[in-house]
Image 1: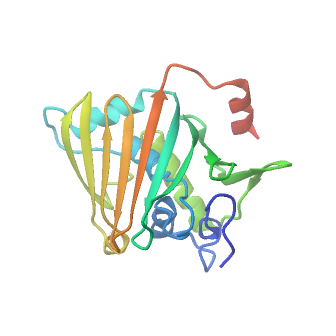
Image 2: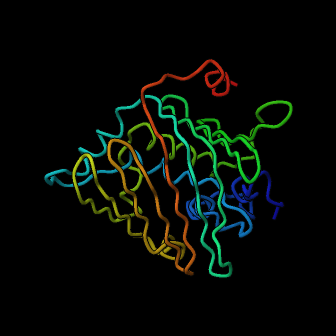
Length: 236
């Protein structure tokens, strides 16, 4: 296995042991499971943003999907806590993010290390001194990236196959619970909890071995377009 790069991005995301990126590998990467020393970006948060469907309720899953699909661009800060059974204190990482419906995601880690990541239709890229470098990707990984972006852009077929979805609350204060449906995902997660209002506010991933990841999306807002620098980052 390749050594981790940046701030805990496992080499698994680029070359999942045998050069294959499976859904399990992606979700374990989101939870930081592959690297116990640092907290990895939790992009499952963004997958969940637009991937909810279901039957009608007072405030139902389709309404939530429509509500979260409205913003073209979301800016915000994030704080991620990785709680490990072997450590008395959580591993904390902080940074900013830019979610652009037509482009992808910029995930800009500030602490404990500075490292920028981008996920788009082309795959996962990391910024170095010479610019954005696309991480090696096999066909299975390309399919997972395609699925991720399809869900991100409002394709509601993404998570129904793999999760049971339960929604509680109303448009301004809701909670979505994801329970793994497949045996593969049940080996990784017991439950995923997402809380929000107009936008997603927090995501909690509970793992089968007792570890957990809590991602707080802070100061998120959808009132600003992409800056020139952000447009350049997505265009490279």
